[in-house]
Image (cartoon, rainbow, N blue to C red; front, side, top):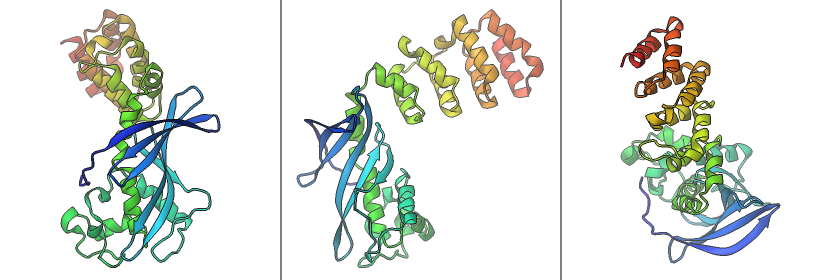
Length: 310
């Protein structure tokens, strides 16, 4: 990803403000000698972090003029962009000073919600003909992008705005949020992340509750069980693949796994059977697997036989 290399320094301001029943902790981000801004972390009344936000005031410079843009950005606790809103009385405008319409705001949200945007590898001059806000005919020379693709990534008359705001949403502040949240990492946060509907929280938490061999810390074993038997089959399969064989070795755990197998969708059933190939199964589980052969298809049968006859 082509971005200007900037060394960041992070300093914590010992200051709290309130937002309803919530508290706000402020962090000063220094990107250069001339660029400093405040990143805010919202905490609930128990001191648990909820989300990051930033009140943004930035100039968006077209060829012959710069205009101020006021907008608020919101990220989750790992720095993943979520949404924006505008301060009261503020609007976004295009190069001809026309105000954004509702569909333009919706389009902007779509643009900002794309972490793999083409903006990551393009400079503004790759998108815009100098002196205008028109697209260049040679835009695909460097990025391999087609003119149609570029048009789908911007709002007519607001190319600079789209580009500038995307780079703020995914810029150098993102790794700073990850550093900040490390200071809030504790049992409460890890349990909360493992139980979250945010799969990125779950992945992050799993990295912190098991070692490289897949050994799960005792306090979080029930959380991993809940993930494996949960509705998100992708995170369930990932958790199943990560845990060590020892995690599934006890009779109690294998009884749980058999119940999970019976109620799981087919793809997870296959993942469970593949995992069991590396586990010493108990007599009870072996008997259950054997009894299931009659109703198993060819793929399941092959896997079960490999488990029963290693």
